Image (cartoon, rainbow, N blue to C red; front, side):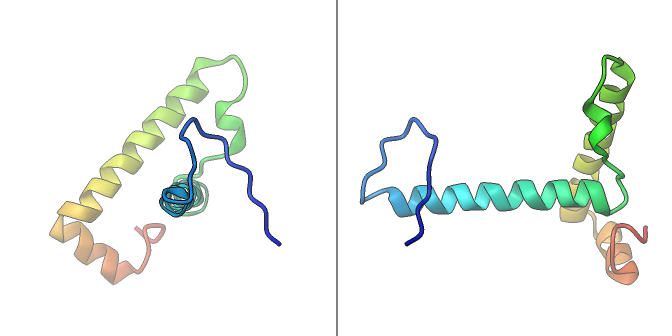
Length: 94
C-alpha cells in the first residue's frame, strides 16, 4: 500500500482528492524541470549562489532567473528563437 502525506489548508474529500493530487504532481514536475534546466542547461545555477551574507550572490540568482524568464517567453513567442533552438537541438548549444 502506498501512503502519501499532504500539507494543505484545503479540506480533502473523496470528491476533490484526485484533482488536488494532480495539481500537486503538476507543480512538482514544473519545479523539478525548472531547477533541472537552471542547473544543467547552461544557466549554471549552483547551490552556493544563495548562501552567505553577500548580496552579490542573490543578485546573480535574480539576473539568472530573469534571463530564464526571457528565454521562456522567447521560446513561446519568437519564431526566430524557435527555429534556432530546433536547429541546435538544445538551449545549452545556444
